[in-house]
Length: 114
Length: 110
Image 1 (tube, chains in turn yellow, cyan):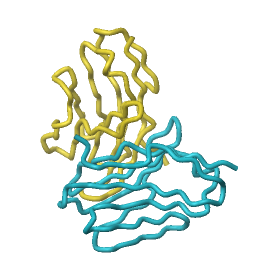
Image 2 (cartoon, rainbow over the protein chains, first blue to last red):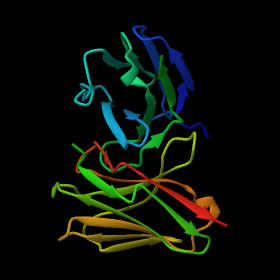
Image 3 (tube, each protein chain N blue to C red):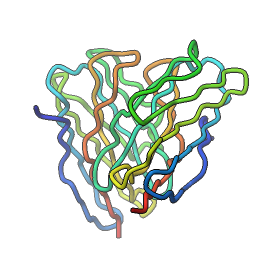
């Protein structure tokens, strides 16, 4: 079956440009997460969507980062005016509900800011 | 501030040996402790999980040991195989937001 799909798989951008990262969750999953994975670091929580509830944006590192989820399905993470420290792998995950349902991760988007 | 501390950062084990990864946490409200396995170029995948009402959980060659009083838990990989070579993350939560450890890269030598 189809898993979580992320695009692009790799993105190289120049400092100061805006980027959009896309996530297609597993069909029917109501919860969607974005995490950031930097080299040698764990996974850093960015944002959480659950159904029609207001998203938990508490992990977004600055106001250059934003995310939306349209129609309760596809999500886009936008980084404006990218900086070199934004270089990382951005992982999207979905799960079937709140609580302790397993997170199903996509393969991530590797972002390199030059 | 990392809520879950994981060690070691990396380890090398011979085929057939035991790999042990340790994690410690501070938040006593945490009530769910999963382990995720990640292969290069892939997203993490749930391997095994435990709740604090049990001290041990075993699934095949993978065992979680949990010490609630010490606020520590560990993953043991028995009879390690080259296919187990991956990065392992412990995590903890008491709601929807998982706090992950920094990860342990395990290399199993044939």
